[in-house]
Image (cartoon, rainbow, N blue to C red; front, side, top):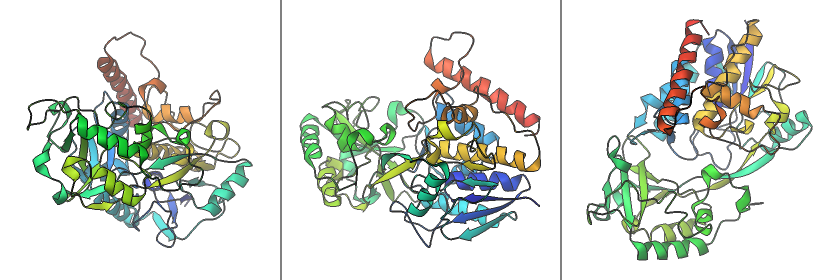
Length: 434
């Protein structure tokens, strides 16, 4: 029986291994944990969520919501485990961080076609192989990949938000509500008036940052911008970003607050919450000092501080095809954030498509064509578009999906029409037995 190697048991690697195994292939999955961990990893299990516990919006009018629905219908391991460990988060799909990782690990370990090998891979294996070692690939393998392609990686910096214990939040200065009252009231909202916001902003701008080698504000990926970097961009940047008060009403005043910090449930027990949008690379004592200026967090217990790390990614448009495979050798493929897709769901989608294509190649079958009308296909076409001169990681969005032939003026209606068209294509592919 044919065997395919997968390097890395993150979201992309686990999705890739699962899809290959489900198609009857023997899979050897290599994972360097627990023997070796990157600075951002803390647990020994697979598919560890090192930043937020949210897989973002779940509505079809949202591009990532469409991508999730495509993956659900295609039998995604990551989406099925996310649904099984879901926690309340309004219109978002958020998960119990450890429960999700545990379930993915259990599914992978128990699949009869998957063999897990623990230990660091330090060379690019011969194909068929999918390398999904992540944006924090070990130094040895990073060097090997660079030598394999004969050029340097690109890179950017990523940051994770701090976590606080739920019982330490002062609920006399906070309340439960989802923005615009959509869905259930799943967020803890911590209000600030103008004076409190002004004082917080001043301290945040001048707080001491941890040393991160080579860090510059311009190298930060916009989707994970540290809160202190946002603060330096202007007085109202935070109030139009993670601290925006629109759609929320403080029950203590009956009015919209001046600024609001939202907390989102981080585990099923509802004992830990993360500060939404508060990615940071401040020194740990500074995080406690400055974030404790938020009235509801004056006595907050920080169970994990925010961290910053360097993410590396390939110059994919020059190197990879639409199925995430090396243009020179189609039996060597890559997946996950190292290819330039940004986000948990996008990483899983890249692992899915790389695996579906690899299975077809190994089994001598036609490679299923995911067109640009689908979110899965559009992502693959984006990272392989040779016309892109200054390639940067990107989340899925409707602008990379083929436009409709008819004009629809209202954005939500247009996005929903794009989503329905995509899902009709996906359903047709499933009927054809992909």
